[in-house]
Amino acid sequence: MAKIVAGVATSHVPAIGAAIDLGKTQEPYWTRVFSGFEHSKKWMEELKPDVAIIVYNDHATAFSLEMIPTFALGCAAEFAPADEGWGPRPVPVVHGHPELAAHIAQSVILDEFDLTIVNKMEVDHGLTVPMNLLFGSPTEWPCKVIPLAVNVVQFPPPTGNRCFNLGKAIRKAVESFPEDLKVVIFGTGGMSHQISGPRAGLINSVFDKAFLDGLTKDPVGLTKIPHVTYMREAGAEGVEMVMWLVMRGALDLDVQETYRFYTVPASNTAVGHIILEPKVA
Ligand code: DHB
Ligand code: FE
Image (cartoon, rainbow, N blue to C red; front, side, top):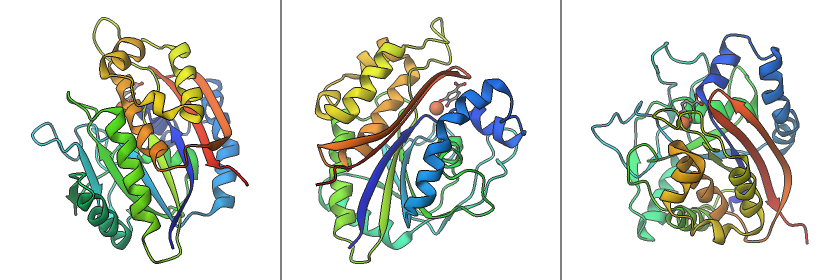
């Protein structure tokens, strides 16, 4: 059977992608950020997942503002990197797992989560930057990827509680897939940031660190945070953190936090990263 073997969360930030693409990773500003992922890349290389379910947000790239699905599951065989204004990022095409994705769609929709099925979709920095942070910059990505795009761009995004429960339903779906597959699930986006308006540049490390603590020890407590609290405490784009709760819902309530990294800032954003693994009996 397929099994979720770990959960990973990380911020995205387009400037991280630009630093990689423009060869700036050795600059002191960027070594501070990338140093936090060295351990994680080695860990991922050893884990060798077959599939990564990556919960991320599209930034009006694949969907534009004309049509905004709340939850969109990528069921295609491949996903091309999008042109976000400077040409597509020079990263490999992302290969999907259409069989597992279709199985997840069926299981989760019949469990009454109304996912949008997407059979053609380009993927932006929201997906490719976390992939670089965890997989490095290979010529081919080392595993298949099932993108799950969540609307956190236009109000109202789904609640943290809905995201957490969707994570539980995804786990049930994965665990009923007959093939032996090692699956890792990513929650991406966050942490605190606001990129426009009078509060642009807002970062709240106290809130972020409490969220990281809660993610490990009290995820159900985090599901009760209303949108307005994310907005007030973590900035308008801080609401991206609800996506981390999809990942968390797909894991045991009791997990071990095997790695954590936090640094401020990358561009306008606080960068947080955590690895959660099953507790060893
Ligand atoms: C920044 C962060 C984001 O999450 C994003 O989508 C765009 C810009 C930033 O920090 O600059
Ligand atoms: Fe973003």
